[in-house]
Image 1: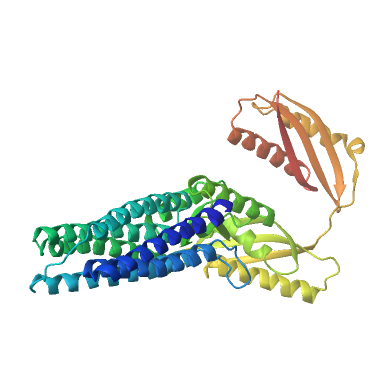
Image 2: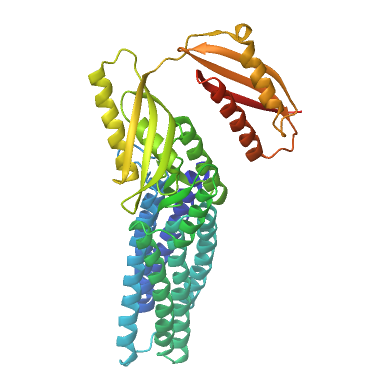
Length: 460
């Protein structure tokens, strides 16, 4: 983002300039007083310079966009910088603990503390407060773990500056052990904070998925239109960026265009709950929850050379006490295929359906030439008998109000009938289907030469 590329490095540079100023001041005071407290503070500030250089390089690198070598961008540079700063902070804590333990059991030589040494630590604490507020504000605005680690480091510096100030005041008052006890307390508190921050940085570097976000994104993906199941959600983060790989299931007969629409719907739902997430969606065909007819049709359609699968019928029957299925289907293939080619394709289709539905399935397929259009001619004017029969049978149905149009065509040496009828607008779909079946059965009983029949219901 534009803001992330500017404010984070600027915050690191401002803090670096202030730290260099403090280090120079502490070096001058240590040279004049030979104070161990001042010397330890000078070393602390020198380490801060190293940490800030790492921080600046980390956030500067993290702001670079993805490239051919870093497909997920450079966001983890922030987390790496934060981890290195945590190690530095941990080393300081261990050093303070060891020094405090040593001084706790030693006799301290009273120090001569000049007033300007006390003033140095007052100024140092004030500068540290400014650094912490500025960097912490930038960390919150940019969501930067590296800046957050720097703010924690400088917050610890406030404590060490105050402890050093207290130790110098106590030394002037004759209480040499006061700074040792205070140093132990501050070191323990900062140590726990360093462990928490270090664990967070390691989690990001090791691609640990945030559990709450996984559940949130999984729920969002499952709510997208067309998704029947969310099979897998994988998350990884780098700096303030979140990447999601999501696998969902959809209907097996969905077209490529439909699958693309489903993937976009998933991306929109995830963007709603996790804005800015880089999402990759993979759509797989559903198997366990899809119907048998749909599964058989999908298995047959996947075979090379098949243009269309239709008239899929599945019958259940019992054989030797076992329930078995009989599948029949029609497949359209390229015209001009030989019998050998058509039979080989038929075998592949049947094997694919058996693999899909199980071994206790018999499959019989019919291969026919595929054509974008079928030649036919209108014979309505010469088949008044069929028109009259359709009208009579339709009007005998209690759910049919009238039959106002009948079309009879001759296609491939058989007759095709289309009838338009009206019914009540509130008529249930199952009653519409039953009436259509009764009309079709009556027509075929009287005229076996009739093939496809289409009854088109319209609301009155």
